[in-house]
Image (cartoon, rainbow, N blue to C red; front, side, top):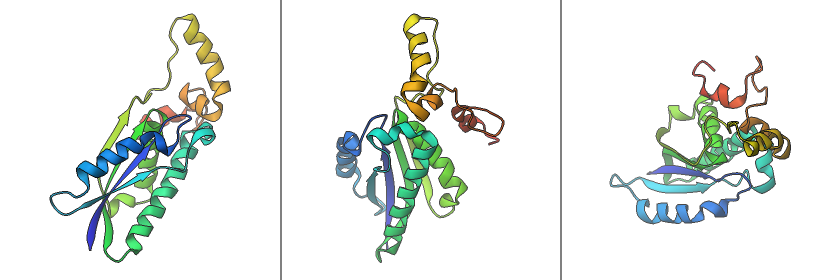
Length: 177
């Protein structure tokens, strides 16, 4: 049985899996097999791309979680493979989706059988898109939630995601949630 390290790459707003294809290629070339024999399998998240990035961090996270589950089950069904490690890297919006994804996987008991290894984000607005005292920031803060749909509301923390009306990004940062 060959152990597998599943690496999930999640692109940003308006993106598609091709935007992280070079990162996937480099990861495969440099880390195809670890010293302990673990093989790297890279999953370029396809569940969210282009227009579907407007659907929100939570819906994107749910879709990517389903994609990870499918990959996990496919690898488990292959006679010689078993997913034993998990890593995720997200770029921009993909970093927020990755945070949500890890929460979902934890909640579903995924990490009872699979060891989490790396969580990386690049250029991710983990505290949302802040409003600064400038004209352009005021314009973006007003138009962003409207133009970017559900994702924009979550980026600018004007959504009421939790039952108590707290925005999603703040809820994800709360260890009690």
